[in-house]
Image 1: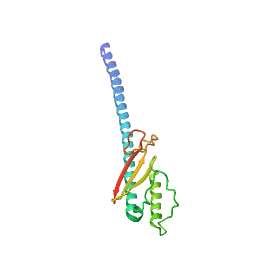
Image 2: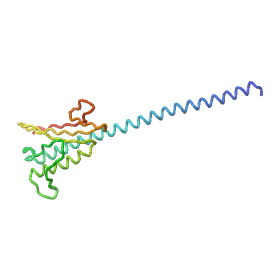
Image 3: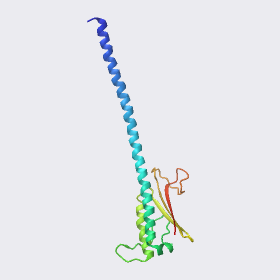
Image 4: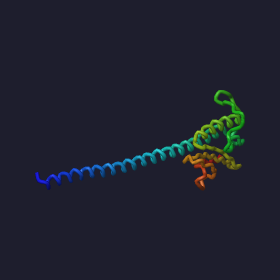
Amino acid sequence: MTHRTRHSENRQQGFTLLEVLIALLVLSIGLLGLAALQTTGLRSNEMASMRTTSTMLAYDISDRMRANPQGTTDGDYVVDNGPVTATVTDCTSTDCTTAQMATFDLSQWKTAVARLPGGQGDITQTAGPPLVHTITVRWDENRTGASGTDCPPQDSDDLRCFRLVLAE
């Protein structure tokens, strides 16, 4: 073998190593991109879950209100962002008045809303006719400590919200 042939073989071996290093770099960048995509997908899935839960909660209390029309008409379902402070009777095992049923329903609803991050819920009533109830569920979708109550959100300090309007 001549000196020239050996030199060519050595160059080819080094070039192959360089190709492997470049391939590893490209693969690493691709895997980092895939990890970022996975993280974004998980985050989007969690946000969708929160939106679905808030929608379900709003429709849950609206169904409870429809099942207790007298309590709804009397304004027993009007509640602010705070907790239900009235004495709660367990209406699953006891006969309740319409007001007690509304308090029981609101207590269960507020407990479920509180499971959302920063979860808040309120129900307002506007005199009619027709009688109009506005159900609002708020939550901290990005878990940033947001506390604003504008619905729809006006800035990053506002909680995400879902609002359902019922006209009787």
